[in-house]
Length: 381
Image (cartoon, rainbow, N blue to C red):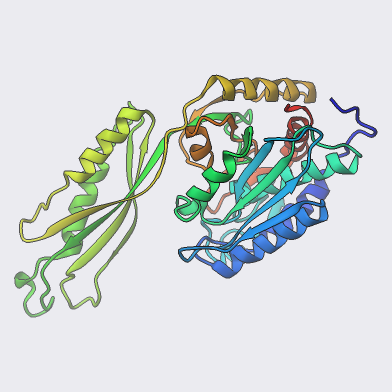
């Protein structure tokens, strides 16, 4: 173990200034220019640390990804800090529904909780360690992902390939609950696209000749969401619906995107079977179901729980005990945890309101979470 020459120092306002710069660069997944501007900022930040940089061009219509690497005292497989810089908030949210602002302990902004605040804090934690004249015990890599909010369809293979080169994965996704719980397991997520075809007609003159794809989809949505079993934690949710052309035309086509959550392995098979079994309610319509990206089940392993125990020890020295558990709300940690790589998720900031116009982090969590991450960089061997 290396002996520190100087203790790292932490300044909450300094952390917040960096977070503000990232949050005020709007980067919804579908806005490639915004995502790549965020990648420019991440690349510049890691370059200032002396990291070696690998920037991979985006594929399938998504933004680039950036990987920055810092050497450790020990050679060999190291620590991967894995997170995303895309958000669900569309351009303009910052000027309208969710301006960057601080109200007491709460700091609001699009993507501040999920998860720009966490990724910047992880960067800051490593920066302060290096500024104190220390070197992380193991090599540390940061991987900034561009399409996590839509399931990482273009980057799953890249994430898994990079993760396999590392001994540990740390994910600064939002902390859970009032104690800032860490995540040692995540439920599986399955996405589907349901497409309905109907029969067109003039909606004003010949309505009864048509068969509305939207009307059929409305009934399908009710049937799909009725399959939710809250007692077992299995959920079905329709989040996007598109259909119709003109209001005076009976719609011939309608599509819906479905997100399903499976807290255990058997539930994944059940969900697939239920979605595949969807059939028309109106026999003159057709229903087709297409399976989409899957976030695999991340179950706690002995190695992940040992990694949590190390984090709990560090947190105790700082002055808090986070606790841990398995949760919904998928992340790229699903991929690495499912591979069996020790993965500790939920290392980001405390707060609430992810994906809403109340999204915020707690100012009081900035320094403790930075210290926790620095401690992990220092001690993981």
